[in-house]
Length: 178
Image (cartoon, rainbow, N blue to C red):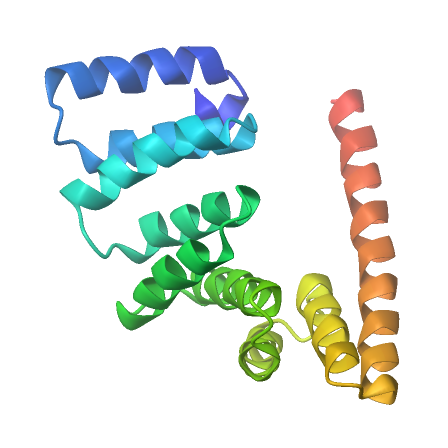
């Protein structure tokens, strides 16, 4: 259901699975992800904390928790769970990129600019034109009063945000036609 944007049906199915087996970490995780997509961050947090309790240190769950904490403006908690996610060997490059990207954002929010720069650079090693990582680099270099590097990364971020926006716009138009 969740792949078809039928969130209410998916929520109902995952809640039923949880009622049958409360220790189903994947149902708690998927429920948390749906609530994230719906913007219900506090509800997502409850589901993801439960998923982490059942299956501690799963990088996927921890990555989602990091996103939720970041959205709830709790960068210290985001940093803690994202560092745990890294310590537990994420199993894919895309997950690693997501964790590094969100971790660099948490570091920047905490004014740990050297850590933000180092982590954002790791994201760029995986996806060299990642707009958000370039943006974080721009903010961090600006805070460290390195104007040239700040401007360079902000320009790359701006260019890539525009490209991403155009791609989303094309995808939306395509989805409406099909």
